[in-house]
Image (tube, rainbow, N blue to C red; front, side, top):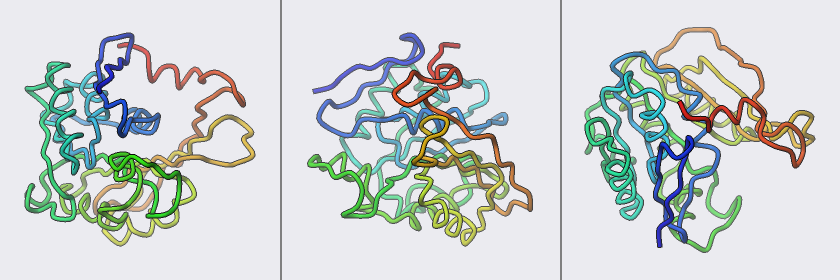
Length: 244
């Protein structure tokens, strides 16, 4: 059974399966972390229901020439197709179903100016377990490792193009190492906390890396989701859901 969720005061619609993987706050954060140039050709690796692409096209469609949602799971790829039509983004957005471990079977090297990825966070057996297979594959590195995800991004992004990811902050060291090994130099980074003064530390990290980028990293101010423990969204977080 599907649910029909809305964003931006009902301006954007997103179908999801009630019993499967459902997007969280992470893709919303990543979509608003992106800084687009003009004439962008964007690839969303592991698109889920396509929500990152939907948000970007709602927020900045004039900067996007094409947006490709790449998804392994057939049922989720079908949702992306429905969401594209539902929001009338057929002229700019498409879905490709496939396995990123074989990424060059689907795309030529250096085909995209910007790569986006909200990857599976957990290695098999770790993290929050799910009895639903679709959700397990989306959250856990069952069919691909973090190295394989970073490698797919490195192959498909053009020289000096950008790769943007959201990942658990406690996995930052591993992510940075893998990005550097694939010639993806981190140029911008922001730590995301649940609320100011949280004793658990940063929850997530937002990363922008540039293929064959030079020295220098912009360490942005911390981002807080809530104004206090058990509080409301911060003003900045509320703006992420505000209509244009």
